[in-house]
Length: 303
Image 1: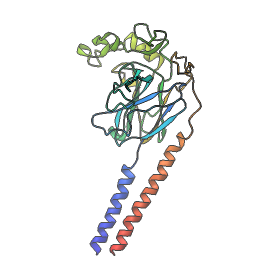
Image 2: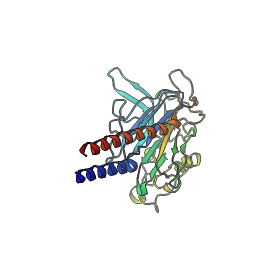
Image 3: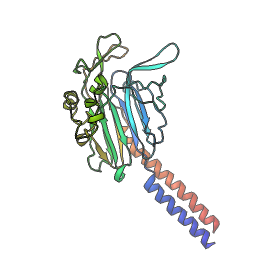
């Protein structure tokens, strides 16, 4: 009798400990403030469990909040100018993942694409994140941490500037009718030169240096990755934060148009983002109370 009671009490203690130390689930709130539809794509790294979705549509003003798998690492980006052909094949002019569907299903973004990159609960229990233009640029994006914002270099990062209009001609991706720039390639993609790709004889921080092309991105977006070894000013860390990823966070002069031929402008803030953490905390407390109640019932029942 005593041993069974001790076992049950031990089980309660272990359950509470696991709850308090391992139940935290980071949330990503993805917001579209563009005046056109954006189709976010999500790719998990090989060692990470996948999200519940790998691609979806966000109309102007819409948001979607997703719970990240524990210790998740991967990337998120926005696809633009997407359509479906008569056979049902889905594709996008920028950021396409070549899955032929809205869900990317393990496929990566085809450059150029602005990337939000994360490693959650990494070294020292910190989240590591950045916005990368190493694979080029297709639309403005910001990452903003919320809630617990300790853990070192925990601050908003990204690129809120429209780079498509100012993109050098040799890097510019034009719309299908050739009338406007819709994305901006990296020098590596445009030329394939090892000095731009940080490959071959240029595969170390000592040999791969910023180029005039990477400086174009860096001068416009100083907190974003501009080339492969741009770690010092571009990687940020937080402890136990939630994150808002926003497309078109500020006014833009981008020539990308929506179906109604309007230019992208910010839309009103999406309500409820600040309440996500509170709602999740309440739900977690209720779940913990239910577990404790059941286990206590087992203890007294065995008595």
